[in-house]
Length: 101
Image 1: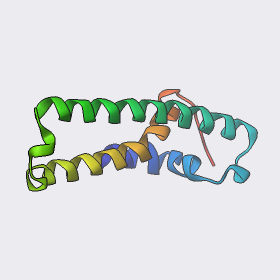
Image 2: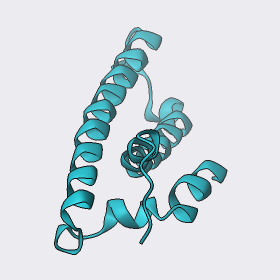
Image 3: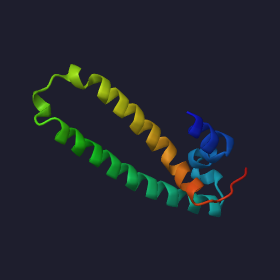
């Protein structure tokens, strides 16, 4: 939660990555498009790797009951939602771009 507050709320990166494209100037549009492209490519790889690791962890996951996966799936879903929303802003922050509204 703390990293989300510092990187996204306090720096206004959250607003930048969630604005409509019509509200962005050319520099902001280019910056957000690059960040979204990179972050969702990485997000796809993270999801595929996570699913592969789950399959490796359970030799036959289809024969396990859903109850055995319930808490792990809930945590995984929460983490993937968090990553999907914060990764574009993190790419902008990692580029050391100063953004002010």
